[in-house]
Image (cartoon, rainbow over all chains, first blue to last red; front, side, top):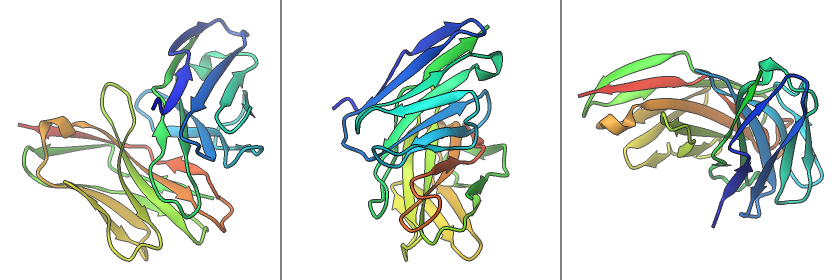
Length: 114
Length: 118
């Protein structure tokens, strides 16, 4: 049981380049999330998908787009990377609504934009 | 809107003593879940404990207990008998449940760094 997987683990981009962070879960969860964590800070929600077919903005959506490709996969795209987007990105999944329990986190992607 | 506040940037505790990490929250949702996570220096997020807003009793998981005071909108984590391996960053989080505007949205606090001294 792989849980939540993220690719890549590390990435260095130049300002203006684009890239897509991939996330997949094999737990049949309805909800998926993308967070960023800056040094010494908590996780800030970028986008989330409460269920397949829906996506919503979180606290810091500017500069990002997401796609809920299917129930398993939720990708995060940076169209034109900026140094302010240097961060560690976490994907997570969970069940919602009457099904209490934990969120499952991926291992994170460490992104540096120069 | 949801908001989680952790007012203690850092806490110190002696090994084998108990420690309380504070968390207050704000939400307009009728039902919600509260979580605590541990993030060691290796970076992974480790789930510790969950409390539903509708739960009558405070949650406990081994050495972890959640002191839930709904009227005060607080969800403090109590770690009993601290161990050196408890040194880490701890995050409080909230998720909106069915019936609310924040359904499915999971929001984190700023975190508290706990250091356990031998």
